[in-house]
Image (cartoon, rainbow, N blue to C red; front, side):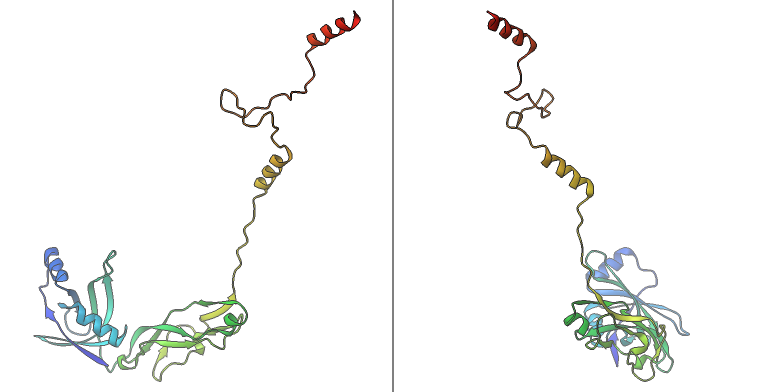
Length: 244
């Protein structure tokens, strides 16, 4: 499907101020190149372009109309603002509707795999775009992959995909698209040193006489229990009293 858009041809060298003013007015600066004609710089409505891309997909065929003629193109590259994510520039490549071109088509997964639903597995999506070669009018917007019958430890490969007639696959046939694997269980292990230190603290509990007491440096100290033996001098004095 070919989508028509009206565009304006802009000056070859635009200043930063001119480009900023253009974007503030919801216009996207862009360039058209390829084929046997020289490249041209254009500006087009951001709203109309986003609507055309939504309608035609990532590989939409666009007919850009300007005072100097028309350009049959496809989107080659889009640049977005790193903060706002708004489009700030677009590159369009001229194409021939009678000549095959290379393209990338998004792969969309549908259904719920048996290995996930019945056996607690996890679906891994390995390949999200398929590289193909086809006429511009034969390029699909997306390729759907039904994973309903996929069991545990089973995979779907590029060679298993069903593609429209006239589409040539450029990716290797054995390349895995999706597969079902066992979900990983995270095991948290307590470090050996931490366990040993905890055991040591449990083996030597703090006595009632030393609890909360600290030395001048603020360190916890241990004091002698009240039932400790008397000093040597005290022993002699006691012996004299007994001899009397």
